[in-house]
Image (cartoon, rainbow, N blue to C red; front, side, top):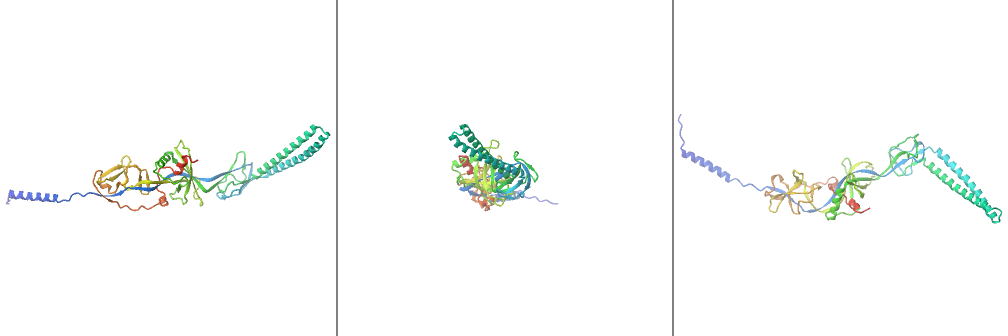
Length: 410
């Protein structure tokens, strides 16, 4: 087999050609493009400020029905759990002993009245006789004193009759208020005592109904400071509205009003009590239910909103955002944002009006990089829940009602 040798000059020429071709391909590659990012320009906006607080419902009026006389319960005249009217008879206690006591008091009164008539007539006669010196002055004085004692006995007899009538009336145990009655604690045949104030049942008025809320005193201090600095505008002490979220997550149909805020901070929990009142015609709210209340506090006229997708958190949990500067370079900003409104963070510090925050394409850039900013295309945020009713997401501030009450509204 014969092997032919390739001339060296041909090998060099081929190598040079391949090298030049590779260099030509490298030189013809296009330069890297500037990444395009979607930005939003933050501007001051008017945002309602709300807070969400836990609480429990309580009845507007609560009346404990108790025995006021001793005796045997003859019958119960209501259905447990039903609505009762003020003055409606609930129980009947055996009246026989009190009828006898009333009759005895009336007899005693009649005896005292007869004695008064006798002593009055005697005093009248002695008055004439003492003027003629027919009787002694001492006898006349004794007659007048007997008349006065007889009059006092009549007054005591009338009081005894009144007392006996009152006690007889207490054998009809009536409802002191209009409301819904609960479980009966006694049955017919039970012996009840006035001295122990035996509890028979409880009547509660459920329309309207109270909602007692608890709030941190620290948040109340923050609210008052924001009002003083002019960052928060309130609409008056009686204008704060409250909406409820029930235990099943549904919103309560009625809107309530704040009544007052306690002026004393609980030393154990560091919180104050706030009370709201709601109409409850359908009896949806029952005493003791756990609810969450969203309270309108006022309006923040200089709020800076950043979409939540444009805010991340560092390893320490602090919120951060990427901002495009005037030279189209990216910088990292530390933010202070503790509240939300719809799908946005309300930024308290870290941004200035006019800043361009990256909300799309954040994964493609790093601080210091040059980017091509374009207006971000964000989907419309549907209003839901409390926001559909004008209530934004919860913040940490105390209610304007509470702030006004705590600062001197007694």
